[in-house]
Length: 352
Image (cartoon, rainbow, N blue to C red):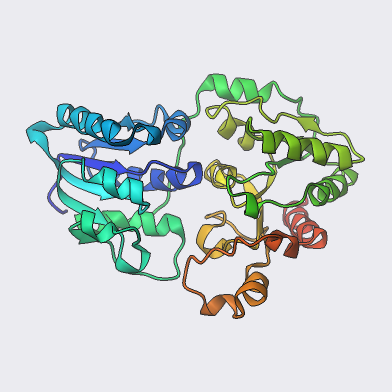
């Protein structure tokens, strides 16, 4: 076993899907070193999702607080770590703000991404790098941050902290009557990854005709409300509208009740996967092999290669790993028939 560090700081502020990918790394560190003091610098909403994660002290950073917030963060961290420095900082985010923020974290070893994944002067803020392995999922890249510490992430375990009260709330939203549930979370925080409302409605009506319950969930933004209203207006079958009604602590419990979750590349996609739920992922703007549902991508509707050929003039295999194709109307490449075929693959695999 490598020498046990006494303290490790993880820096990953956002987003919901990405912080979900960090949890297996936390589990790996805790399994190897049960007594290590873990501090995680995180965004406010992301903290609400993961609050209660055992063995982790969270320190929130408000992106709007600027340099004053960075100095305040450093003061907080100095109070938390013995000797004034963490044994290691895992700098898990390459955005410019996160890179600058990392300079305010007192740490001896500063572990960052390999050069191929670096951007925004990331290399200036780290003194060690993870191995360069192109072609792997985001979660596996994050998991490799334990390797400079002498570990290897050999299993992926989430066990997200879901309070009993959250599950009680989710259980109260509909009565189990033997029907399977298709839960639709229609919006990503990246608008160009979102699908058209009438297409969601067509797939939902197909599932309803097959005897499925349809539930919609999402946040409180105007985009999500407008999208949901458009889906409901285009549907012939009834649906349960829970958009804007759950909290971030209740969301994992709600997703857990579904049999299948239909969503674009989004936080709910990765939270649902972490809760053990199958995902009908809608992909054209992003590569499901890199950022799709980690555990099972059999039920994804994948038009990423078509998008690469149409918008970038080359097949996906020739693109730099991680290339986003967030062009206007790129998601129109994913057809209703694509999503229905993915739904039917799930039905065929899970029929009694």
